[in-house]
Length: 103
Image 1 (cartoon, rainbow, N blue to C red):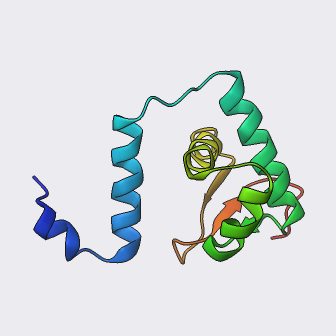
Image 2: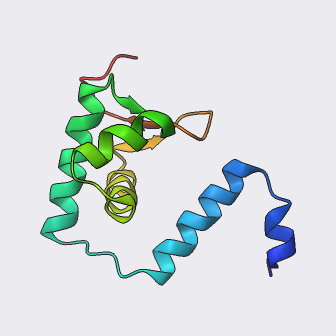
C-alpha cells in the first residue's frame, strides 16, 4: 500500500503517472462520442505542433482550444488506450504516434 508519506518521496514522473491512474479509477470518464471527438481534436492539435506537446505548450494551447484539465486528461488517455499517443522519454511530452509524424 502506498501511503501519503511514501507518495511525497517519489520522483515527479512517477507521481504524475500514479495520479493519472488514480484519476482513471475515481472519475467517471465518458468513453462515448464526446471522448472520441475530444481525442480526435487533440490528435489534430498534436499534428499541428509537430506531433508533440510539452506540458508548457499544452498549458497554453489546450485551453485556447477549449480543453480544461479533465478533458485534456480524458482525451490523452483515450489516444493512449487506442495506442495513438504516448509519453516521450522525458515523461513530460505527449507524442502522437501517427504515420504523418516525423520520426
